[in-house]
Image (cartoon, rainbow, N blue to C red; front, side, top):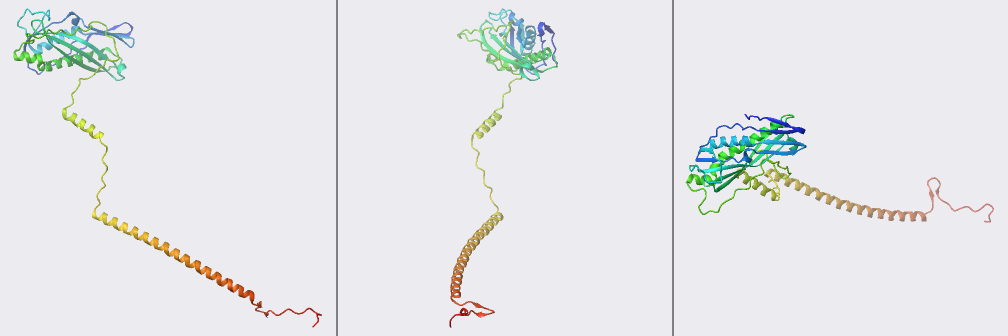
Length: 335
């Protein structure tokens, strides 16, 4: 479990917290065969992060808890560890193999109000300057701890403390696992000097503005969880999918018909052809009949005209009175 720290509420709704050292299980590692000294500068021992956000003042005291954390991690990582008063000058104890000087480069956090979520997230960036026993800079190691914690009702201090402790524990685990693979560790293991005799002198990076208020900028990006590398096989699969997505889709293949379906299709085609032939024949027969009917109508018309003319030329007859007679002469007309 994570030990919670004292919480101090400052004026105007501000929050000031002092996270304690997080609980750490005993790591399943083999101690590195080296005698190490650690120098804690005054600004590291008294490191306090300050900023104002959403009209409130935030203050996180990290120095004291980090001194205890690094003491615990060095005892886990190396065969022998002891604090030293200086790192950049030759060590009185010539038995030391190297001296480490830790720095907190940046502390950043986000709240649920910042992210629109329901969690707190913390990022702590560290720099470790590694010196040879004669005081020359041999290497600089940079790594980052990430931590997150769910929001707890109206409280802001407790989840911020929990997220900070998670980030501290994450950074400690990374150092324990990754230090044996660093170049300086390979030199120690091989019994080689940490700095070559004729190598140009290196200068450590400028110390961060410790114990001063850090302005919050939009460019600061906070990551709530450690970065997980994607395995190569998954990466290759994703690249192949992207490549396939760029290609135009292949035309769909027409399914092959079975012999039974082919025979059925041929019969259907033959039937349709026969129907078309019958329609053409019917159209021709209809046209021929139409012509014959028109000829018959013309002949009938001519016959009717001839008969009408004959009837005009013949005397009118009556079925009752018989043929019409010549008109009688008027009465009294001379004979």
